[in-house]
Length: 372
Image 1 (tube, rainbow, N blue to C red):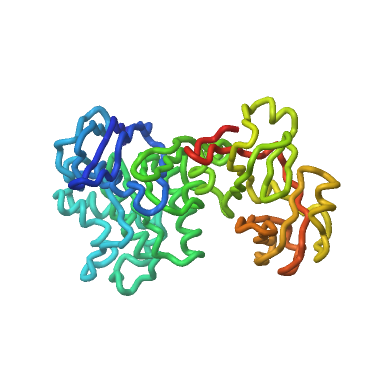
Image 2: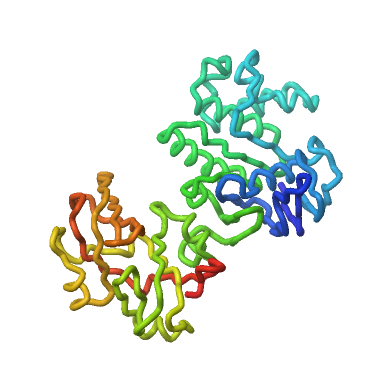
């Protein structure tokens, strides 16, 4: 096992820069997740660490060893890809032990490791089967088992669960986390799924357009995103972003005025008439009164000034909770609202929403940086 350190790694393909200024260090035994939208550079980073891509510049260390010029087979890392890449003519046992066989490990050691790995992954009753006789989840576990049996210094996992159905994905994700707790091997996991990132990671690296946006533990990134991209990407449903103009000691949101608390105003240096983007998560919005088709904007303005009047567009019952998508009258902005499962407004209803302004984020619309 080993730590992994990247120093100013850059990778260019002809005139295209895939990743730039990538610097971080993963301590020995930790589970880090690289997350971001498609094309952000996360798989390029993983392939560079594996030795399947060569960094254009920068330094890459595994343990205390500089590995820039060391071929992939000598880096002592094991990579699991999105497609399982199992040998169809081999049994489960042969697939798991193949990497050890290629390294000419003693057959008794191979047999012992294969059995131990198979038991840990609940594959011990499937050792004689061929891949075509296995489900997708079982094939994925065989691919993981092949990597584990090698006892590498570092695991590299490139979207290994993306081909699984929802229930199997949840089950395998839990197995992965438990397995890491047992083995303690340094693990780098790539995904575009923010739920996987939040549930698996010791630390998350959020990427966009080849650059690091933020590094931190899941709860810190969720509660204190560095910018609008991070805020919008992490969270399900995603954070609501409301374009607003600061005037009259409040924010004008599509013609409705939100008066902000004095304690919030003291933290900000807001400029009259300037535009800002407000962010608030769905769980910090509350329905202030029963659904109605007659709640008026005027009655809102005469009441509590931390409210917004919206019109229900779509209602998605999810059992324990209900997700409501509602629009601001006369505006293209749509809000996600997360409420209890017993709340069932109808499309067309007008709702008076109470916003928890102590949970409000303020972003610069030009740079996307968080102001508050």
